[in-house]
Amino acid sequence: MNCTMCLRLVGFCAMTSMMTVSSVAQDLGERLRNVGNSYAGAYVEPLVDGLGADLNSGLFQSVHFGRAESGLDVYLGVRAMAMPLGAGDDSFSLTYRGTAALDVRIGPSIRRLRLPATYTVEDAPTFFGAEDPGVTTVHVRHDTTISYLGVILPVSIDTTFQRETIGGVTEGLNALPFAAIQGGIGTLFGTSLIVRWLPTMEVEDLGDVGYFGFGLRHQLDRYLPPLPIRLAVQGVWQRARVTDPADDEVLTATTFGANIEASRRVGPLTLFGGIQTEEARLRVQYDLETDIEDEDVVFPIDLDLRAQNRMRLVLGADLEAGPVHLYGDVNLGSRTSFSVGLGLVFNGPSL
Image (cartoon, rainbow, N blue to C red; front, top):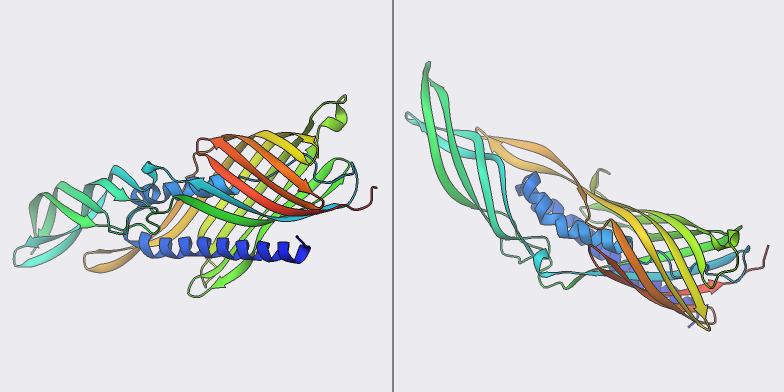
């Protein structure tokens, strides 16, 4: 495989991933305007876990990708990741407190009041659930007073009703995929730099969508007596970001991973593994549109959600055929994910 073909594969995977991310953000912005904090958090929770598991996958394929301990070895490739979705990722049940707008008759007139309410949701679709809207049961039990013609009147309300909410976006999806271009340069005194990115794309009626990440890896075995394995530590920061036409953030996923890696080369095959600690946070911002006493009111919503994965065990293999490397791994944590990659290594002179 030549360099041109590899770069075409990189571009194809990057475009596919970009379309996935932009579709997610656009649908979230449209759908979440009708629900509040608690519902939105449960709705996007599997998406948070999926993005966290994917972005923190495939961060390494061997301790040292070049031939020299100190030289300008360059790596360029594409990495594809996926987190399988389970049975519990397509629906959720929830009970939470909120407010509800009710029409209350006072004498000959009707007034709209916003009162405390209890919301109960059973088997509502998540982002990965059925397209049919969910249904929430709203119970309002409240005693208050209202001024009418200068007279204070007691009002007691006890009512239960149902409302449609929002449906899922990607029903039938078995795994959440992601892809990124991945490059690296090193090593200089045992230290190498890796970079991940997708080209920024302008999406009509949405804004710009982009992704970028970088990390540093440092070899540990250079300080130790000769070992049958290579050892290194690594830290990687990443961010996927969507902005609207006003350059306001709609969705931002930020991750950080730190790991200790080991690898051993056997002919053209390198076996590698590692233990990684990590954090992934998803920030979703939108406006909740509602009405109070016949006036449209907009409440800004700002969700800061964390993915389940905190630790993972990584096991994988890298097959080398000249400058071409084909690799894959499995990531075992609270959520399991997989990654595969194809890349080229260009070995420069030793320093």
